[in-house]
Length: 459
Image (tube, rainbow, N blue to C red):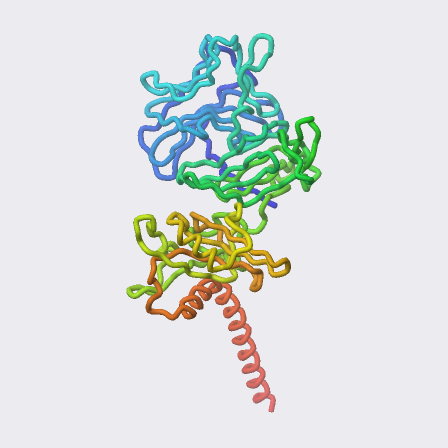
């Protein structure tokens, strides 16, 4: 499995020679006067290790959404593994200064002494900043006691040897959207979540057997290890290669997470394990109100109204404020499920009752009804996001219902509207099949035509 990371085009100066620096150190980088589309990243390296691939610490200026952000970064090769501005960006103009004060505080400052970030270690006897061979950026006193470390402030990567306690999480970047992903360590599982405002839905999890409790996790060279309160390993997500692992990463673009090793032959990082290997199992494989089909293509749930015959916007006709008094109805789509998981609102319930529960909640956007005929059980899930939809086999027992303004299908018979929506779900698969069949029939006709003309010439 290959892994694709955002590799920075670095315009950095090499200003280091050791793996540590002392108090009183300063490094300043100039900020470009004009923002250009396509972004910019540059700055200066100040620390490095002698490992292969090596860790490097850089003071960075990055162009983000028309502004310039200043942060302290740690790289493993060309992969960013830690960022001081991951949760709160420090935007600057003119210049950015990294200052290691005489009283032991590491700070980022902008023009007019504007303070953007600090370690808060003043007066603790800190004497030096060091990048360790593990990739841990640490502040130490004269007795080699660690007073601050980047391992205590995880971003979207866990490095080998790094330990995270229960209730800790990794998060993806939130630069361009209010939606973000998280990898979370809970009492009885590790799980992936998609977060939007106050909404939070899981789409993958791994649980130790016998419902054992997790106290902390740690990345080793052979896998992700889960430990209990007695420091005993209770579960493991193993690597699928003999090469030692380097890091675990939560991917900003997809929300998937994987375990990665370094290939000396290819001179790049590759995945030895990924939580989700099917495109349609990712929460944002398609846009909201889009369905991921069997052919890994997206199809909108579109509805016909009086004045239009569909729209390229998947949410057209659906995104209405039902809490303002607007009446609603539910449209049912068979053979569609959602990768978003949660606790069912109720069990042993009818489809109509499940639909009514969503209608009674003005913030509910959709409902998923699942009936397991083999055990005569039924479950109802309510959602405030229409996301992560995927096509499932006929007869799987899933029925997805979407809330729409009441009367949206008043000029269509119910079964015709439903059939049109089902057609939209499978339209891409159908086109692919028709194209293949059509191409074969055309080839067969041409072949027979050539054979007939050849027979005429021989006779």
